[in-house]
Length: 411
Ligand SMILES: Nc1nc2c(c(=O)[nH]1)N[C@H]1C(S)=C(S)[C@@H](COP(=O)(O)OP(=O)(O)OC[C@H]3O[C@@H](n4cnc5c(N)ncnc54)[C@H](O)[C@@H]3O)O[C@H]1N2
Ligand code: MOO
Image 1: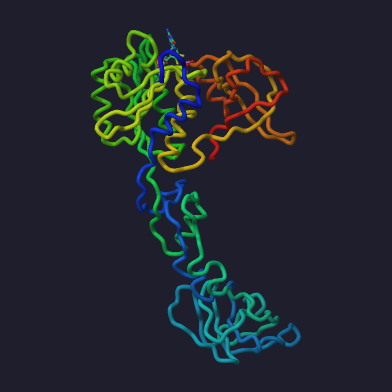
Image 2: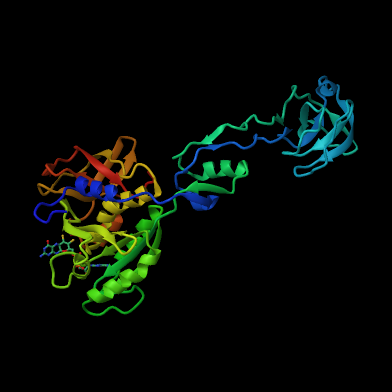
C-alpha cells in the first residue's frame, strides 16, 4: 500500500485475496461443515432406499388377492405376522395371507402392494379390506431415490442442511472441507472499558471487539475475542504473540491513524511485514494488512471508529475469511435498488452509506439512514445495507438506481 497514493478498494481487496491461501481441507464431523464447501466429489456408496419398504402403515398383500376389494365386496385375509421399522426378521408372504406392516418396514418377499390401514377394519388376526391398491402402490422401491455410484455432491458444493442430511442418509459421518478460519480480534485503546464494568468520565465501552467477533462468526469463522489492549506497544506486541498460536487470521481495531498513541502502527511498522496506508473509501480510510509471527499469520489492522471498523470488516475481512474457507464468491454481490432520497458524496472515494433496504411490490428500495459520522453506532444498528457510491459519483438523485450491499444475507 503506497503511502503517496491511496489504494482503491478493489486494489486493496485484490492484494488481500492474492496474499491468502485457502486452509488445508480435512475430514470434519458433518455438523462442523455446515456452511462450508465440500472438498471432494462424493458419490453414493449405497442405494436409497436401501431396501423395498412400505410408505404406509397398513397390510402387505399379494396384489391379485385384493384387486377386487370394494365396500360391497370386501376381501378377508388372515394376518400371519407384523413388520415394524427396524425389525430384522425377514418374512416371505404366501398368497392368500397378509402381514401387518408399518411405514418404513421392509416389504416381505412376495408382497406387491400395501393396503393402508384406513382401507381396512384394522384387524389383528384377520383383516377386512374394502378398497384395492394399484399394483405396487405404497411400496418405496430400493434405489428409486439414489443409486449406488450416483454423484451426490461435486467438489465445491456448499454444505447446507439438505446436503448434510443426504450425506448422513448414505452413512457418511464425516466430510472433507476446509476448516473455519480462527479469527482473533483485539481492540486497542487505553480509553476502552469492558461492557458491564464502570465507565470513567473519558472512557468508552469496547464495542468493536464484540461487533467484529460477531461479524466474524456470522461470516462462518471461529471468533476469539481477546478484548482490550491499552495503547502501550509492548503490551500490544505481547498480547499479539500470545494469541498467534490459535489464529489463522488476526484483526485489530484502533491505533492506526496519525495520532500520538497509534499503538498498532507503532508496534507493527518496525516488523516490515505489515503495510499501512490509505484506501480511497469513506468510512475506513486508514488500513493495514500484512503478516505476523513465525507462521506468517495474516493480520488486518482496522481503524478504530466503530463504523469504519465494521465497514472495513465487511469489505476486506469477509472476503478473506471466505477465501480461507474456499467459499465463493469472496465478495458480497451488489444488488440494484432505487434510492428514495438523494445525497451527495465526496469525489475520489468510494462511499459506503448506511441504508435501509427493503423489497416490496414495486421492487427493491433503499433509504439512507442517519449521518455520515464514523462514530454513529445508533445509525449503524438501524441500517441493514450499505449503499455503494462509486469514486467518480458526487451526487445521487432521489429515485435513481444505486448499488447496495445487503448486509446479514447469506451469499
Ligand atoms: N489527523 C488525523 N486524524 C485522523 C485521521 C486522519 O487522517 N488524520 N483519520 C481519521 C479516521 S478516518 C479514522 S477512521 C480514525 C482511525 O483512528 P484509529 O484507528 O487510530 O482509532 P483510534 O484513534 O484508536 O479510535 C478512533 C475512535 O474510535 C473509538 N474507538 C476505538 N476503538 C473502539 C472500540 N473498540 N469500541 C468503541 N469505540 C472505539 C475511539 O474511542 C475514538 O473515538 O482516525 C481519524 N483521525
Ligand atoms: O475512515 Mo474513517 O474510517 O472515515 O472514520
